[in-house]
Each structure stands twice: as structure tokens, then as C-alpha cells.
Length: 551
Image 1 (cartoon, rainbow, N blue to C red):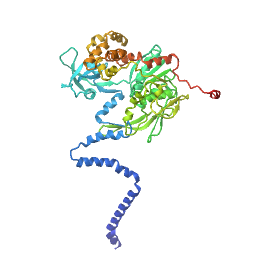
Image 2: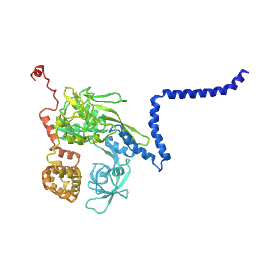
Image 3: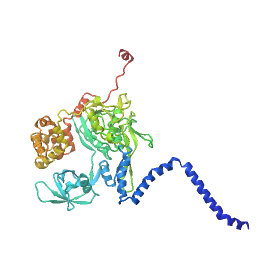
Image 4: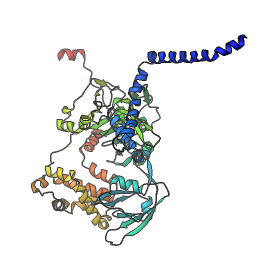
């Protein structure tokens, strides 16, 4: 009897329990969810709702995916100058320089008059093995025209790169020939070198130029050091000018090669990233060699980590101009569609504790992007006294003062020489006319120029060709008015630029650097430092109490 009575009221009891559960749940959600629900509802959900509303109700048809692609960079730009979005189509290109290799045909090219010109062919690469030579024009790809206004560097790279062992048919127009020759190239792995020059500056001083910090930079450096060891080098110059950075780990590995055990190289720290120290392990083979590191306003990120580690540990002398000032750590995060972001998660700090990052205003990149121009106009490229140090002084291991607030300030300053710069030279160089002329001259004279094997031999030949005058006539035909007095004043600069590009076109990047370094003020100062035994920094003189009284 009781059992039947209980079963009669069971549905009512269950309904009351459900209502009570809903009431309690609502009460707790409203009173104890706090800001978290508020943030979610007003943040990401609001963006999602907006996109749904646009897709559902907007007057015209809208490609929502395209809208998202355009919005992503804008959102990240509100954070800092180095948090970026990379579309799926651009990810491979963004990573290739640092990966150490990519799959392609193996040529360096330039686009002139809507046509792709082969500037150099990578030795023993797919294109060279197939018979492509420098100076060839690629006018067809897979039997389709490959010229015109739509041909850009990005289009060319996307077309010529591809999976390993795939084939691409190139229609080549060779100098002196009217008929197109077809060459089938089988794509292969193409190495991208970080160490682009290794040679002896004099009988004692080795020189290594590091272009960026990629996956293979450290092993490339070891090979370069071994090469210099065979030539009995006693001093070392590492050139980081124009090196925009790359992988942190590569910079740490290289610094480790020159530092004693347990020296702090760099540390990173952020709001959600605990401090992480990177220290030397004492296994480096070149801990005692006299050393100079060259930097300039184009040296950034990993370059500044290496220069800062050498400077703060008093391991060598830094020569040049103040570096760029990029001290933000980016973490790559991939999306399902193969696009990715590089999100800033921490800051770099040099061993003395100074932050490498220069100041910026979140969401306002205009001043940040124009910082180098502002430095130039302020006179920082021409006078060390013009460098503005923001923030307190820090101190190296032996007590030398160094400064944070943006970049690495060199120990020895090298001013940019503008003595012979004229408006004509600026127009000639910035318009691209010098590079264009140098390429066309190279193209028309390859047979003769091939006879000169070394950089010095080729440079001596070029000096006899009156190329500055020929360039002035060429440039005048292209719309740059001839200014004889300005040309005379800038003659050496014009000559240097023209020769260097022809040497680069005919030989390689190392020959190009050897030529430019032959009269470079920073190189001259470097050799002087080594000659005078000043590569290892000295502690500042201590002022005694008697000296203080006298002062």
C-alpha cells in the first residue's frame, strides 16, 4: 500500500528536484562566475556573434573567411610590433630562410622589365645540373607564358619552389639566341646558408659573416672556424651587421662556443613565462681567442643576444652602431588551416639584466617603424654623443657601464660616412638604377668577365672600364638627369656600388663582402684593435678617495 502511494508522488518529487537544480545552478552562475564569463561573453563570443550576424543578415554576400584573414593582423597589431599573423600560403616562405633548406630549382633571380633573369645558379643544384646558366631569362614555365606585370618575386618563388623530385619545364631565352630552349629541372633540396663569408682579413685575423640565425647556423659556424684554423687565425671578427636575427637557440650555441663555463648568455621572462636562464657549458673550443663583433642598426633579435652576451661577459669588443632593439620572444602557434601566428610571450634580457627591446606603444606602430629614420635625423648614425640612453645604467662582469632601453650600444662607435653623398647618388642608388645597370652590364659581358677568377682580379679589370661615366649615360636615358659636379664628388661611392654589384653577379656573396670590406671603416678599426691588443675589454679605472678629494 505504502509502495503504491510513494510511486504515485514520484513524478512530482522528480519535477521539484529538477526545478530546484535549475534554480541553484542559475543562482551560482549569476553570483559566482565572476569576470570569467563576462570576459568570454564580451570577448570571443562577441566576435563570433558579429561574424554570424554579418554572414546571416548583411546586405551583400560576404566572404567571412576573407574577413577573418584581414582581421587577424589588425588584432595582433594592437599588442606589439612583432606579434604577427602569417597566412597559410605564406608560412613556408616565412620559414624557409631559417629552416636551412627548401625544395626548389636552385637559382637566384631578379625581375627586370617584367621578365625573370637568372642572376646566379647554385653550385651543383638542380638548375645547374639541368643546364641553366646565369644570365638566362625564364619566359615560359610548363609551356605557359611567365612574363608580364603580374610577375612578382612572390609569384616566381611560389612557382619555382615545389616538392622534392617533382619536375618543372623552363622555357629559357639565352643571351645571343632568338629561339627558346626548353630545360626540364627536377626540384631538389636547396641549402640556405647563414654563414655567407669566411676568409682572412690579414695573416692573423679571421672573418665570419653571419647573415641570419637559422637551424644550421651553428654547424656552419663550426665549419667556418675549422677553415680559418687551417689558415692559423689568431683573432676573430664576427660580422652581424644587417643580421635581423632568427632562432634563439642558434645564438646561444654560438655564444657558448666562446664563453667559459657557467656564464649567463641571456634570459627570457614574461607574464606567463617564468624566467629561463641560458648558460654556457664550458665546452666551447674558442674561449680565449681575441674577438670583435660588428653590429649596426640592422642587427636585431638573435644578433643582439650574441652581441649582448659577448659584451656583458667582457669577452670581446663590440664595434659599429647601436643595434635595432628587438627583444621580444615570439612563439609560433599553428592553426588547422596551416596558417599561424607568432605571438610575443616574453622579453630577452642580456646577462647584466638590461632589456634589449626598445620602447613601443601598443597598437601604434608608426613611431616604432620610423625609429631608424628618427635616429638618422637626430644624428645618431654620425655621432656617438647623439645616442639617447633611456633607463638606468647596468654593468658588465668587470664593472663597465652598459645601457638598456633599446638595442646594444657598441664599445667603439663607427660613424656612417656621408661626406661624398649627393642628391644624385641618393637618387641613383634608391631608384634601383645602379643595380639594374650592373646586372645589364654583367649580362652583356659574361664571357669576358668569366676570365677573371678572384675578386681582386675582377675589380682591377672593372677599374679600367670607365663604368661611372657609362652608368651616368645609362641613367640619363632612364630619366635621371646627369649632374657632372655631383657625379665627380660621388665618384668613389658610385664606383664602389657599381663594382660591388657586378662582382656579386659574377662570383658570389663572399667575393661581394671581400670587396666591400676592403676599405670599410669598421674593418679598419677592427684590425687596429687587434694590432693594439685591445680586443679584451679592460675594467674602468677605480677612483681612490685621494683622487676624489683632489677632484
